[in-house]
Amino acid sequence: MTVIQASEATGMRAIIHVQPKDGGESQTYAIQFLQEAPQIERLSLEVENESVLKEDQTVGIKVLAHYQDGTQAVLKADKVSFSTSGEEMLPFVKVCWNCINQDEVTLKAQFEGAEGQVDLNIQANTEKKVVQAVRPVSVVTGLNQEPSLPDTVTVEYDKGFQNFIRLLGNQLLRKTLLSIIALMF
Image: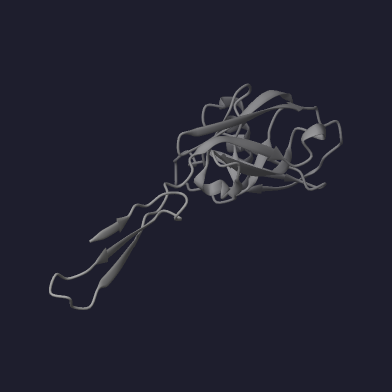
């Protein structure tokens, strides 16, 4: 029996030659070893229009994984965990992020133990906007019952801006919406 050990020089392939003692036909076996896949060292985030972010704007996000071997890959945003520092942000719809309030914010991403972040400065949006829609519009109520409101609503403005508003814990906004609903019934 002859063995050629697997190494980088042999492409991680070991070869075994077996010659029977009775002089029969020799057999050769090849064993291919797989190298361990490179690990992700870090993540980087690319935010669309990063230098001119405004509140109430929805922007695209791309997350890049940087591997030990120097390669890069774009990760699917729905597989990445995101968080923010600063003002509470309602986050992501697939590959978009909603900049709710003007603030300096650190946007963080985490995937399989690797992390990355980017510091952003969201400017005030001074454009005059007219509310076009509030979604979802379904409200559940019954006779002599306070309507059940969703935890969050999306406000859509005339210039393409959107704003996610958290109703849970916002008593003034809840009262305002409830009074509007009362007028409708």
